[in-house]
Length: 212
Length: 93
Image 1 (tube, each protein chain N blue to C red):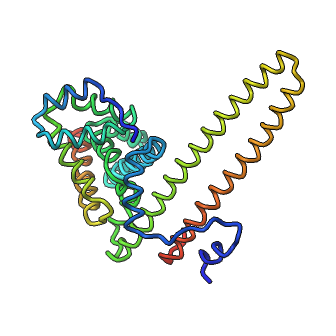
Image 2 (image 1 turned 60 degrees about the vertical axis):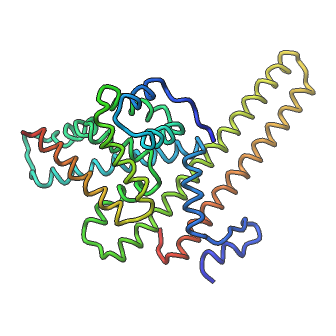
């Protein structure tokens, strides 16, 4: 039994359908384009990946230049200059508005360009890309869950303040019970979400034979 | 779908550019679901220089079309890597 099957055999773990690669890819692309929270999470990842890619250009340029004691701040200065360049900003914009492929490519550029065998590169890219997408989805789901929790919490706290102002002990007690219930529900939802995410990662690990 | 009306400055920029209707639609479609930051970046980059839009449009199309193809993405990344190196080079000169 592989790790994924072990987790899926646990009756407490939500069942995940098999990873139908094509459908998942298309579905996630569409979801990223149309769901604001997911879109935002994706844009952030695209931005981080583009930044990392630009850093790499600077590091490479610095290596070629060689150590120069008199200009130790050169990389920082040049990084700032490069990131504000029109080329870099255009790159960032088009990456953020495009599909999901850029995240893995920009993040893993040095691995791909350092002479990995084509088959290894392809496997690495597919795995990385899948992980990136799962992580983006997870972050977006978590952000949505937390936003809902804070919304409900704020509403209950306002109600409780009103009851307190009225010296309504019964009302305050009722809200306190609702707050406790909300806390339990939030923690459970968070655990469910994390479990689902871990399960999906294990599923991908089992499918690709790579650990991450 | 949570599409929002685009800023007038984006519409003006697109209408002043030499892009055909299909390419303008591509930007509208993508920008209509993008966050504020990227709308501002678009305006900042192109409102005073709409002549740069055709080049950026080609890059955007290439990235959208690349999907999950490592080969296509590597070609894009290599080209952009060189562009950034050129920027550094021109700064040194």
